[in-house]
Length: 182
Image (cartoon, rainbow, N blue to C red):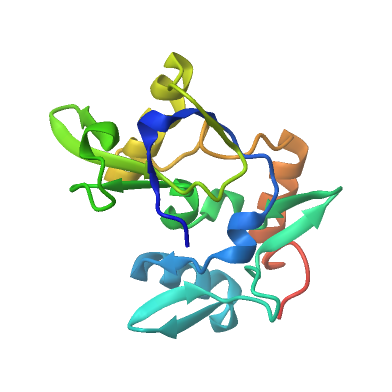
């Protein structure tokens, strides 16, 4: 695994729907996220290991909610994404766990934080942070990490509204994730 990089090395970021994060990483669930998902989709969508709850993975290692649509990879959860999914590829910490503290440091409303990015994500553009990146993506990431907001606007893919509504309707009708259940 490659060491996370301070946010000050990133010019911009946007999700390009490659699905790498959903195929390569296990998603840790908070207990309340686990309860909600199990209540809606059933116990087979989650697993327990090392004292934590995780989204279940297919035999190929991908998340069971990952769907390929028109050559792009989409999350079947969308409006119910776990916090870990909403934050990726960013890590917002209260201490400089991965070093280079000065480059990772951000003072958010008097709260000292250290923000890193996983360089594995192909949606990253390297360089000096653009003002737009700082005022939208970085700000939203921090607010999601701190629990100030839950809705994503800049830290998710730009799905067409029709597809977003389709995925939401499947969930509301109790059809489970968009695609076959395991």
